Length: 219
Figure 1 (cartoon, rainbow, N blue to C red):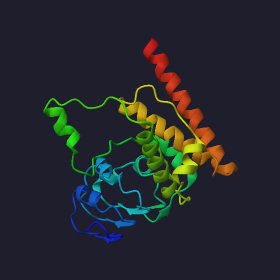
Figure 2 (figure 1 turned 135 degrees about the horizontal axis):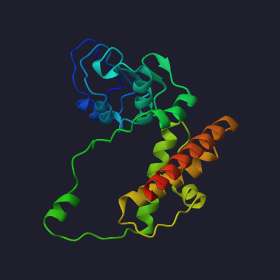
Figure 3 (figure 1 turned 180 degrees about the vertical axis):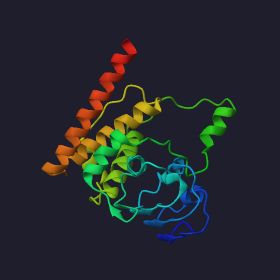
Figure 4 (figure 1 turned 45 degrees about the vertical axis):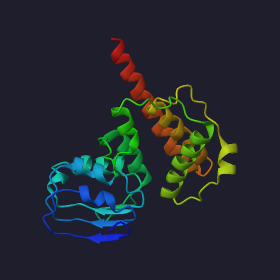
């Protein structure tokens, strides 16, 4: 049921969230008192960008540490507005980056033909056209803006807003970093003083963690 928006299945002995990844239009999901054992199951919800309300309390995955449980879910599902009948605050979202555990996202679609071409030995282009990169960045940016309830940008406005050069577009990680940076720079214009302060604190914490990791590697 890809178009369903609200699902209430509390007390149903559900043990996995895998099938919910196909409900791309879901906004509210109520699964209290089920049998979801592992918190890693929330990885199946990371592609549900319209999801705003989630209720998972009284499942085994909640564990003995309510703070860790809540921070992990908010780190992986930052677009939630309410978790277990409790409103999500901006302060919690910032704290979740520090206290929550990152879960790897699971694919929501079948593999494309690119995989088949690699197996058959057919080479793929190592670079993409500027138009392709612009379209990809615009899609990533508008996805984030939609989650925040902001107006989507048209191609003309996007192309003149920010340009990030990429020296190695065959590297998927570098390409995604560039897209995320473009989105962040655009979103900064929409934030008020409180929002900018949260971004500032989060960025400082992230830099400290990176510097600490680099220092440990040098030793």
